Amino acid sequence: MIVIDPYSRAPIYEQVIRRITELIMVGDLQNGDKLPSVRVLARDLGVNPNTIQKAYAELERSHIIYTVSGKGNFVGEQDIVSKQVCERLLEELRQAVRTARNNGISQDAVRRLVDEVYEEGDAL
Image (spheres, rainbow, N blue to C red):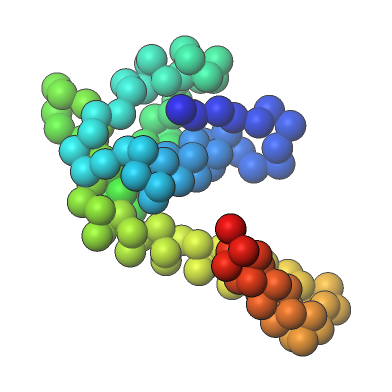
C-alpha cells in the first residue's frame, strides 16, 4: 500500500502524504475508508510515529482525511480530495516552472515538455 524510498530527497512524511493522495486519486482508497493507525503504519514503514502523525495532520489540514475521535483516520469526500490534490499538484508544478526559469530553461522548452508528457498520456 504505502512504500517509502529511504534514498529520496523528499522527507518521509511528504512521501506518505503523496502516496496516500495517489491511492485516493486512483480509487484504491475511497470516501470513508479507514487508514492504518499512526502506530501500525509507523511500525510497517519502520519510521517514527511522529513522522506519520505529521503526515496525517497535514492531510487533515488539507481536508484530504478526517479524524473521528477514538475511531481513527478516514478518507474524506472525493470531490474535496480531488480539489485539494489538484491544488497541491498545481503548486508543485508552479514551483518546478519557477526552478526551471531560474535555471535558464526557456519557456518554449517547458511548453514542449508539457506537451510531450500530455501526448504520452494519450498513448497509454
